[in-house]
Length: 326
Image (tube, rainbow, N blue to C red):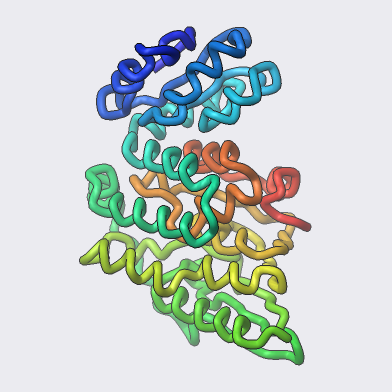
């Protein structure tokens, strides 16, 4: 839905427009194509309804030319073109997931880390039962099973350094249940000994391709899966030792492959590193803490851009944004 006049969202009629612009009725993003900067008072009157709109809100144009409060209220700022096309296409294909993502990012912005993780896990659990996710599951090719050779995670102590390595190179270090559990256990070891510094790497051509697609859709009880995340969350375990952790990434860092490292204080990236959040296109949201860790590094707008476009960014962009440190 295109909006060229903010008066639609301001005043007593704004609540009615907010309902009409919901993805429940339009299946589309709400695109603010205003041309010129609106009157500051008009923008202020529209902001409460913008922040509650049940659709991704996209401001088109140079963000610097609009009132800062208006920019802060929308979900994404783009110049138009391919970025806008990608966001609109993702929203049309997965309107519920796209809206769940931006609503979560808005709501979680002021929360403490644990509360934000609970909100993410709850939203993820609900989407597991959604029609959009179920349609994605039904349409995808059957994932190939890649048996692991050796432990999913290798752990070695060298003096005051605990070296952890994801060890599923044949699966591009996709994070399955065994990998998650072993990673959390290793991070708990580090938490128990404050003298340890932590180094995390991934073996093979990629740091991590994210969640193991072979396990997608296998959860029988979304509520139990939610409880598992609250009990054994690799992002929370990483956050507990973040100040003394360095993550070394390379190759493809997809989904959880950047969501978990983003909790660490320091990320060192090889020049071939790329970073991508594809979950919304599947009917889900980032579920390994990415709606918490990534906005705290690069902000809510850029996180929403990554998730709604599903595009990979290169290492130079990641460095400029603060997604990686070196």
